[in-house]
Length: 114
Length: 112
Image (cartoon, rainbow over all chains, first blue to last red; front, side, top):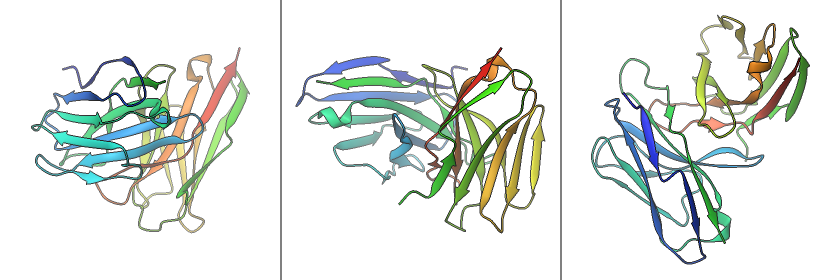
């Protein structure tokens, strides 16, 4: 049981390049989330998916797109990277029953845009 | 508009001392208040959480105190240890399956 996994762990992009951050969970959770973490800012929600086939914008969605590929996988795409998107990106998931509020986080992807 | 305000930004405590981190919220619809612990290079991990129907929850050396009328909650770490040195985030949510709203974090350093 790996929990929430993210790839890649590190990435350096040039301004204007695109890339997709991958996230997968093996806990059979319905809800998945993408957050970004910046120094002194806490974690801010980019997008979330309450269930397979649905996605909703969070606090800071501009410049990002997401795909809920299936119940396990939730990807985040940067179409044209900007230096302001330099951050650490965390994927998380939560169950629907039992403890539906509890979110489990992956190890993060550290992205630098030059 | 920041919905969850966390203080202090950083905290230095001696080994064996009590660490206290405070959070205040604005949205009265919040009904779940977790604390997350994050070590350098790792993702946040749930430490302890409370619902507003209780005023205190204790798990080992970690206690959440909750004051609904003041819209405040705090984390107390008793007998603080060097291994507790990490960044702590409070958060709040109003609905399962939606976003957690995080405070900006407190970096705790426990000196030996």
